Every structure is written in structure tokens, then in C-alpha cells.
Amino acid sequence: MSNRDKIHALLDLCLDIQENGEGKNGYPYIDFCCTNHGTDISILIQDSGFNRGSYDGEYRFDFANISPRTYENCRQHLLDLRKQVNTCTTTNVHTAEHI
Image 1 (tube, rainbow, N blue to C red):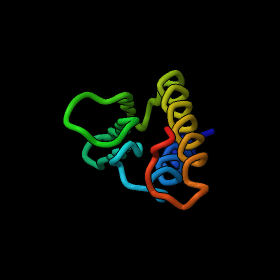
Image 2 (cartoon, one colour; image 1 turned 180 degrees about the horizontal axis):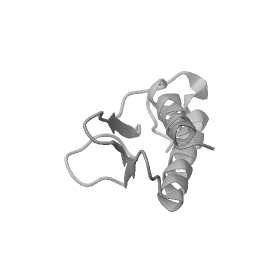
Image 3 (cartoon, helix red, strand yellow; image 1 turned 30 degrees about the vertical axis):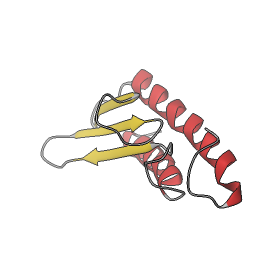
Image 4 (cartoon, rainbow, N blue to C red; image 1 turned 180 degrees about the vertical axis):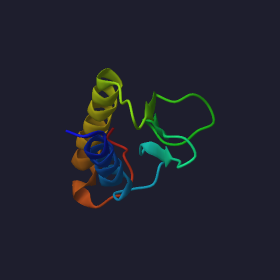
């Protein structure tokens, strides 16, 4: 899998979570950032919604050299959140009170 494919896979997971709710009231907050000034990509996660403070996951990638361990840790974190979100959103309620 190319680095581009890996980034697309992570972005797809972020979007799967994002499209089902806002990052508040217990629903996961995800910040996906990239820049074309350098090659930095970052994914910042707060499992229980946005709040001022630390992140539950901070994943930073250099597009040209993606660490397999960082990629897999980020991917697993997003898969776990998506599973929790999918469990709670089957009722069409846009909060994650059951998480």
C-alpha cells in the first residue's frame, strides 16, 4: 500500500466518524490537517468530544516517510471509535451517550 493510499484510508475513517455527528457531547472530535508547505499530516483525536486540553491520540506523519507503527496505531484508534459510533448511531441520534 502506498503512502497516498494509507493517508486516504485514514481520511476515510475520519470521514466515517465525522459524517455521523459533531465532536461534542461525548461524540469523538477529530482534526485532520495537512499542508503543502512541507509534507506534514496530522490527525488529532479527543475520544469524548472537543475540550480544551490534551488529545487522546496525536498522530503526525511525514507524507514521504510514514511510520508503520504510527499508521497502525492511528488506524486502530479510528477503527475502535468508528465501531463505537456505529453502535450508537443506529438510532439516528447524533450523540454518543452510549460510548
